[in-house]
Length: 308
Ligand SMILES: O=C(O)CCC(=O)C(=O)O
Image (cartoon, rainbow, N blue to C red; front, side, top):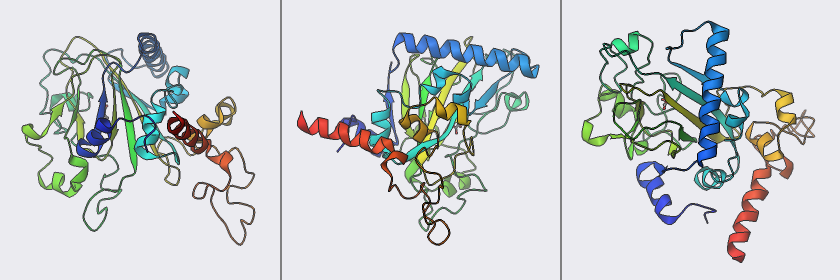
């Protein structure tokens, strides 16, 4: 039983691999996040001596600003996240992408092909790919060649992306069901009729299975692309952005946030009481409810829904 997802959203998630939530963020939230991106980007540009026109990404973005941290358990998004992937989860990655308008004379490569003068100039023509299927990981995922369901991301669009060619996220609906080998065999050239260039108002969000083939189009507009992805995966997988988050950060977080940030607040030994003879990782087993407060939270919301 779902906490928050409508039947139509469940169907879309199953059919296409994503659910679009137009104008999801409240105007105040959008302004706070957009300002936070500017602030963090400016700070990093100064620290690293980067030019203001540089396109770049920030990973583990949640440590850089509380506006980003607040997204991980966003009160209206978390129920949808738990409906999509369950409660036994943590953050794999949080990344912001900042992509100023391309110089007007820059010849861009084809969408999703990973080449062209834009790629050479450092604008990263992101190639069509599902996440977690690089040559190093899951190249031969399973007997049927498909990627197992490992994670979802929430894409937050923090700028006006209603037009084409402004750094839009492109998706191939339903492709999470297709083996990554098919994409390789196609030379990563996806027929246009199978693709969808997302065109969304600022403040929209997309909850998506990251096994869905995706890429990023060029920014030929006069606006800066500002977006965030918040990625959630199972607690028994390893995050990409951190081994352990900063203990000071964990300490000022609620129990649910601590779970999401990969913390284990309850135990002294993460391998359990009999770690010498019967090690039992607390990331695998959830004997102690304090390790996974999201479970009780989700169950209480479901019970509330039944009582209604
Ligand atoms: O910048 C984006 O929107 C997409 C980045 C990407 O390819 C990914 O999240 O795997």
